Length: 289
Image (cartoon, rainbow, N blue to C red; front, side, top):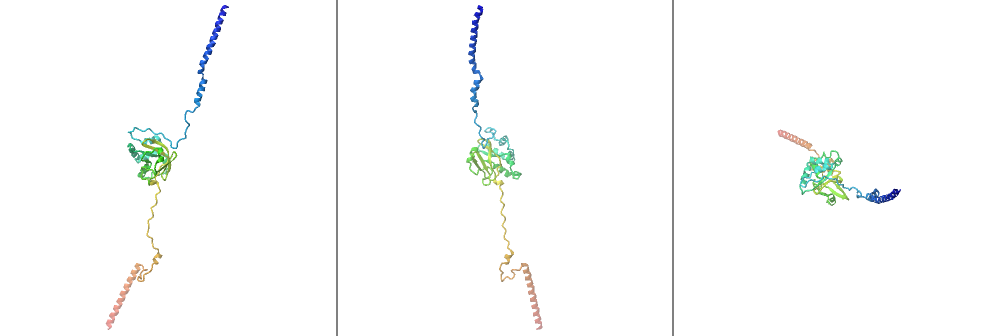
């Protein structure tokens, strides 16, 4: 009985210490609870982390391949091939060897160039047989009409002077006018109106812009004026001939030349016969006398 009474206080002390330990550990576990963490991170999850999406610009930038080393040649063909959609333009550049002129020009660090590159759909929009009807020289001029002999960034078109000079020829037969409306760049040839629809490539020497229509110059595609008709001498009407006054001393005025000769020969013959008759009469008179 004494052992039981002695053990009971120890048991009570054990229970008190156990409950104290439990109560002391529960606040330490509270920070590991997921509920406070969720509440702490909730404002961060709801706050916007990126700016709102903006409307696409009127002249979207098409990613261009990186430029080669400064001393390496600029390969326009590879740039257009990587951009895609310019196979017809590339083929004509190669067939006319204009691509060689472009790369030679770009290899000179003092030269710059701006290229308006028509897409395949732009060439499909031409009338059937348009390209085949052109002579080789005309095809060269058509391609050079798409080249400007200077580097023009997209933001500098609003300051260009019209008509813009191209590599085709003079600005009289090959005029090119470029104007801007906001961020839109308008191009007019006098026969075609289009806009720049994107930037294919741009650095400090070369700029290539995509256009959705082929630029047709007046010097090749303008309707040719018909040559003036040759002037002919006015013919005199028969009434005009009859209205001429007759000369009194010219009795054969209205007689055709052939008939006049006939009459003249007949008159000579008549005169000869008369002279012969007079001669016979004279001889007969002399005999009787």
